[in-house]
Length: 57
Image (cartoon, rainbow, N blue to C red; front, side, top):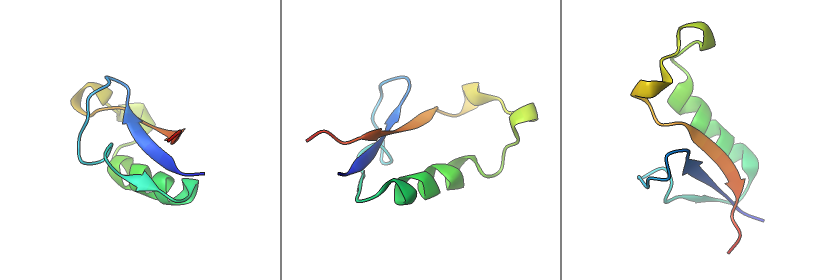
């Protein structure tokens, strides 16, 4: 099984075009994207919301 990252708004970018062999690799990338924000002060309107999903090819 492979995984990909999607954007909640349905748009495509360089992150959504990648395919990952395992969930952990995809998670590490998403973690890097959101690493510098804290949930209490997050303004997600400035950044796209990413979700990891099964890549059904």
